[in-house]
Image (cartoon, rainbow, N blue to C red; front, side):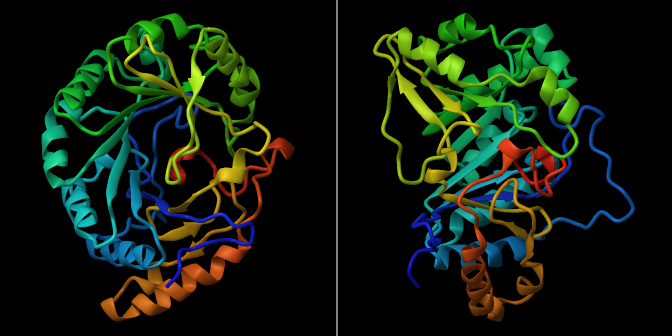
Length: 327
């Protein structure tokens, strides 16, 4: 079957799969009161269901997978998920986004299972600010885990920092020092409005273009975007080992290069992080002989993908917070 493409000519080699909505952090911009399951919470996809899902997506040209949450390491079978994903024919890159709390204990186990790219959420290099944002005083241990990933030769190591006005938007000098000798990509992510964070968004949203202008004025140069890359615009400087990336969802034409689809922890296909609906795939993940039906279902829905999100209009879709869908 030909690769998955929508009516605007965009192709989708990249799948972001949430494996659990739960998270052990209390980040102010996502789950400030922590994660709380209710009585109606549905169990996340099983290992067998995940395997069938990935086989369906690879039939449609997916080759890059990112495991997300919540916090994926909350799942006790995460290593098995990584190993299974890496073994699916057609999957060439297995990445994961994590808060890094188990990096120092599980990193080599995950690499042995097939992990070859990792993004770690580090919203500040200031210990006090990090603790205030996340609810956990774990910065030193997490940064040690990042250094372990570099020493292990992991092909891609990136840090994610959500930009927050009057909280961490003045830390560029510290990040410059951090990147001078480390081959790490640091991605500054513009705060996005979700279903439950409007007051926080109004208080702390800052446009990422301001930081982008600072980088350009300091001699950083924009890099071409790879076909299976994420949404970041990346910048390189000859005097630094690392790179910066800017994710600016409110920028003009941000969605023009969209190349990824999402599946929630319970098996709903989301055509957009801020879409108005989910398409339940779980009924088609119960037996190996459902593969053709699964492929047809995914392919039949792609025509419903909008040209862009509606965040500029304050429409956040059915995403109450980023942990619910995987960010």
